[in-house]
Image (tube, rainbow, N blue to C red; front, side):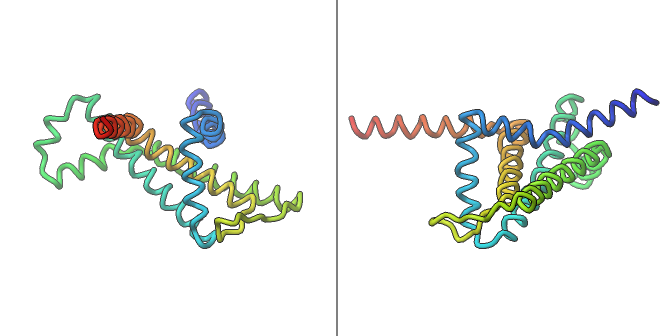
Length: 194
């Protein structure tokens, strides 16, 4: 009993710390920086901070859904039931899908949401304690402050998770597809210039 409890606590602590690990990976790798810059540029186009929070909630829900679908697809592949599931009716597929969602996945998603909330609340507390003033950019209508940067960081993490982790687990490697398209464009451009 004690070992399983310790293992569960360790798993949940891992999911609480996961956003900070992801931020480190995003900020310290060229792929991460190339991903974060357009995301923050997109956030700067929003008209209010409430829209940024709303966008975070939408991204969180999409990440949750794509994560469940990716886990479902991995489980089918592991159990070698692809042929069997393909023969199911639509209703049987839905029942099979929901039967394979574990409460552990739900718990981890809740812990991840709590982690984001704590991250945003801590940034608000730091801003309040150290009296950090909001700032703005000439290209954006938003007034930027520490909590908005925290929300932006959370959005980057969620989009990273959706596009580069969950889609890859589902069999769609976005980076490979984008590089393939870029290579094709370069080849066509080279042929046109010759």
